[in-house]
Image (cartoon, rainbow, N blue to C red):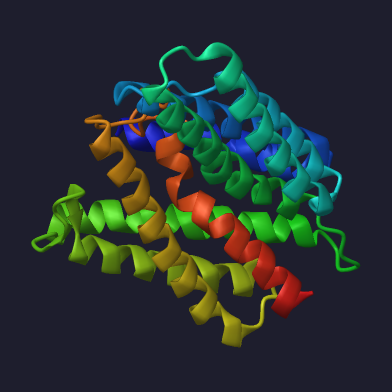
Length: 269
C-alpha cells in the first residue's frame, strides 16, 4: 500500500512538471533525481571501500545535464575526458593510499557514466524540437508509463504467480513469471498510449518498442541489483517510501532513456 500511495503523490508532480511547465522545470527535476541517484551510487561504493570523488562527480553531472538541456551533445565527449583527467590529477594530489586510487577513480568515473550520462537522455527527450505538437511531452509520457507499467506488472505478477527464479544469484525475489508480467504491462501501456494521446507512434512500432523497453528495463534492474548485492545492501536508500532510493527507481529508466531517444532520432523523427 505504501508503494501505491507514494506513486499517487509523486506521479502528478512529475506529469505536471512535464505538461504544464516550461522545459527547464522538468529538466531541473530530472537533474535533481540524477544527482540524488549518483549520491546513492557513491554511497554504495563506499560500502566496499572505494573513495569516490563526490565533488567532481556532481560537477560533471551538472555540466552534462546542461549540455543535454542546451542540445550540445558535442560537449559530452570533452566533458567525460575532462573528468577523467581531473579525477586522476585529484588522486595524485590528495590520495596517500595508493591501493585505493584505482577503485576510487574507477568508481567516480563509472558513476558519472552510469547514472549521469545515461540519465541525461531523459533531459534530452524533454528538449526535443519537433514540428509536431508536444512531441517531447508525448515521448516522455510514453517513457514513464511503459517503464512504470512494466515495473508494476512484474512486481504484482511475481508476488502472485512467481515460482521460477530469474536470477537467484543477483536478485532472489525476481521471477521469470514476474518478468513476463512486466513485458505484458509494457505492451499494454504502449498500446494505450498509441490509441489515446500518441497517434504519431506507428502501430507497427508499438510491440517492438514496448518489448525492447521491457527487456532493457529488466536488464537495468538486474544490473542495479548486482551493484547492490556487491555492496551487501538491499536498497540504495530509503528516500522513497515503499520504493527504496532514487537509484532503485532509475535502474530501468537509465537503460531506456537512450533507447527511446535514439528510437526517436532514427525511426520517428
